[in-house]
Each structure stands twice: as structure tokens, then as C-alpha cells.
Image 1 (cartoon, one colour):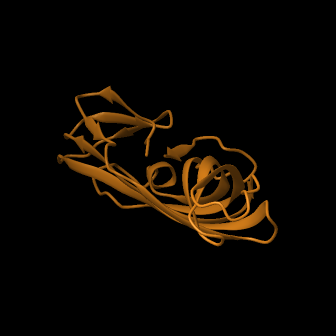
Image 2 (tube, rainbow, N blue to C red; image 1 turned 120 degrees about the vertical axis):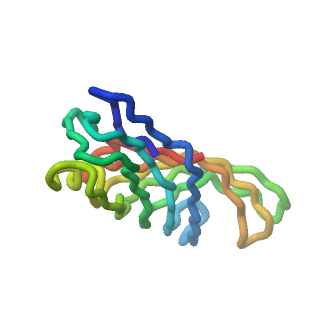
Length: 171
């Protein structure tokens, strides 16, 4: 996941290359409309800093205290939504179809640090919220009741359940 981090002063570095995962399952109530339940873990972001560095997260500057170290957070959450899919051809094995989903998810950016003066970083780098998520994907029908999906999902992280702003994505 992205941290919206920039270095203002000094030479801090950021590592956002951790792997994430999403587990999603659902059930269709009609041939085309169903419910989606998901859990995800977007991994960890780490920022290595030195004493006196100034970092900016979401356009707010933070002065690093008198010691060096790492500031890190991890993001996970769960959601519930509606999925709409193309109608599979009855009885065909390995039938392909398309799907779209839209829902609401609860996310949590957890972690802590003593390297930043005050606790003002907590509201930007360590916080939680409820936002929209959306996805588009391809279904592969395995049996009459089981299908596998490959999808691209966008998870809003702006703590505003009516937008997909400040989003992370998974493929």
C-alpha cells in the first residue's frame, strides 16, 4: 500500500514493496446478483529515518526526534458488498464470465512510533475507517456452484464512505 510519504529534509527512505493478499467469497441469489465477503492484508510500509529528518505524510510535516529508527504500519480489513456477474452458460466446465462488485469495507492502519515529536502522526499514518471498495474481474466456472475469479480491486482509504479517494489496489 502507498503511504503518501515524501522526504522534506534529510535522507529518510520508504519501503512499500510488501506483498498483500485478499480472500473473497460470495454466494449468488440469482444468476447474476450476489453478495461478496472479503478479508485483505495489504502488508507493511516502513520508513527508515535519522534524528533531525523531516518527513511529510499527506502534506503534513513531522520532525524526527533525537534517535534514528523505523516507522512502520500495516493495513488490513474486511468488507461486504454486492457482486454482479454475467450469466454462465448452463453446465459448461471452464466457462468464462465477467463480474463487477461494489461494497463497503472497514480498514485499520496499525502500528506505533516514539520517533516523532507528539502524537499528531497517529491520525495520518495510524488510523482506521470505513470506505467504499470496487472491483472488476473475470470468472472461471469450475462446477455449477464453484467459480474462481481474478479481479482488480480498489479500496478507498480516505475515511469517507462515499468515495474511492486515497485508494489502494489489489490484482
